[in-house]
Length: 343
Image 1 (cartoon, rainbow, N blue to C red):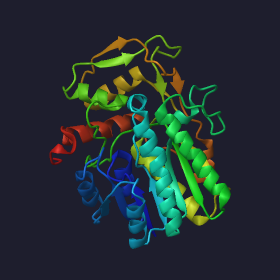
Image 2 (image 1 turned 30 degrees about the vertical axis):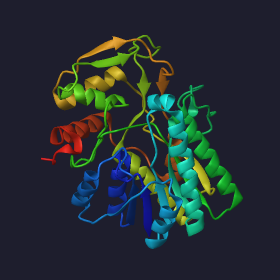
Image 3 (image 1 turned 90 degrees about the vertical axis):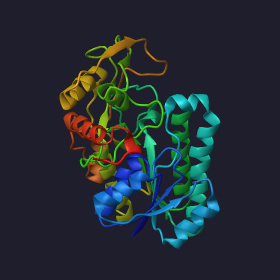
Image 4 (image 1 turned 180 degrees about the vertical axis):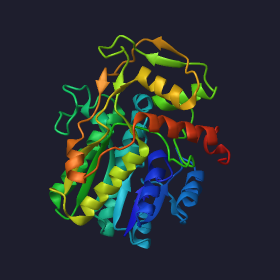
């Protein structure tokens, strides 16, 4: 089976390419390289020993997508392509709605015209909004509180409507918590362009001297140490969840033709616990200072993973120390990301 992976040159997409190739699938990557680097594709080939078919294209171009789907005889899609920064989404919301919502609509239209009716969609725990109870289950009310989260929620609703219109469609909606880590080889990892959007890249940039200290936003939450708690998941575990979701859909064994599942560990780690874990992994001091809470940040957010275990026969295996160790290995081998060859 040939699987189209949109955004396959990005952080999670590149790790997904490795997982699918090593599982024996043929893949085709579609990426416009707006927030990724072509070097990641070369690294994937080095890890797997396989050549990658890549089309530099934008998911908002339906004619291109139809040509690619048909030319490569694709039978399924794993959809990562889109804008992904919460803060940025509040500043340029129209770009988020165009890239994420309109882009996915265009992709679905191209799939429909090409006879491809299976998709794994990269969603987010942001669709839950402010937690009303913990751990978060898939039936928790959805109420996104920023444009990024709302685009994910709109896409989820679009997929459900399409699935309801035709039982031949099959969708797996995967709600990520907080992906971190890197491939154990140190060849591919998170390569943020500009100011990072997430905690782990900030920590690594303090560890390697690029930043003087980490700003910890809020130390007065009702948590065990006063700092925010999140569910961090190793990117390798995350993409193994994608592989299992794809296999479940392809086998026809899913309970319905459209399901949503959490991909997390079920454990919450505080900001200070992340700092201490990274200090152990890197043998570096992570200087930090406390800053006021940011608007929209919640005290705690972590997953209930029972449905993923039941439906996908999947469970995250890698612990926090492995997440930090693999991240530091990537940073040490690639101090400027993909700008210089891995050593």
